[in-house]
Image (cartoon, rainbow, N blue to C red; front, side, top):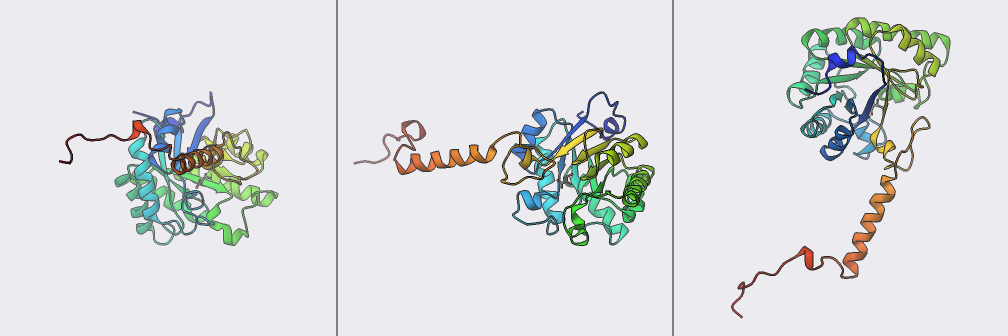
Length: 270
Ligand code: KIV
């Protein structure tokens, strides 16, 4: 058995938890082989893979399909499905059914909810039913229209206190971990010290129990990445160069070569 929700809840803090997004089978296999603890099938699939300029258009079917691809290719990492905009929060029964689909049909081990006061009760219901919940506070990109952008959150004491309270409420409701996005590092440190469940930061400083980034930023596939991220590779350059080499080889008659095709004898009479 690979990494479980119970392993994450009981994390001994000897080393930080590693988490990365993945959206397809080949990438998930590479992330899994590298020994990353948690794979998040983020609704960031909207911006990174589907060509949208926000996560709002991502559908439940999109997340189910991408999660299924990821779980088929993952042996060890814990796979978490990120619930998309308006797939939860309207009607409790429908929200539970949608979250349950990710475990029942896509083989995820847990779901993530962009959290707020509206997700405390839902988290409790889901956990009672056996659907593990990763909470997510700070910058919650599904609120982009309300927030007016993707700016840092919890920068004033009242707002920071509100995030801390919500973190406590979600732990009490049974969440097994908490993503903290784009908040001051001293707020993330305070929350990490306060909670028993692990915090996993993105743009939240080094004090969190774990770190998460978006895979396309990490491998350098995108031209732009957020200031709190880091490109550890140049996938964009590598892919462009392979495509250009292929184009040139075809145009110059170098591909396919003798190794890439064969002639069948006795195919024609003449
Ligand atoms: O969708 C996503 O990729 C996320 C991470 C940034 C935590 O929610």
